[in-house]
Image (cartoon, rainbow, N blue to C red):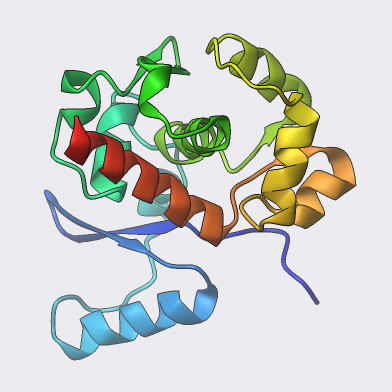
Length: 190
């Protein structure tokens, strides 16, 4: 049986006010993390009470800043995406502030997808939703968007099955890592 989900992060409240955020890619890594924390006496494993279950499965705090989330995940200095004029969010829409900073259009696309998936905590975006977002960035390319996305799919940067199935865009782990590398490079060179 194959799973239809991908793990990205787990948030574990160690004690009130102290939350551990860890990147995991599958259930076995999550189990390993929980066993490690338990063996180090950092926390004890227990099932949540019914009153806490509702809180656990609720949506994250809507006041979380997408830029802060991106900076945390990419291990960038806090506030660097805005101060270096790399990326911002307006009404929950990512905007590349200086498109000339990107080496090529495919790097800009990867960063946009990374901003959607990580900053907005959306696991994927449909082609039809992504197209106007891409066009609104003012990126110049001699290739059409479908051709650029096909190239990203062929190089393993976006999930091939999702894109081939219903033209849904989602970064692969390789694409996620490349987007982080692009952001780090831009922030460090600006």
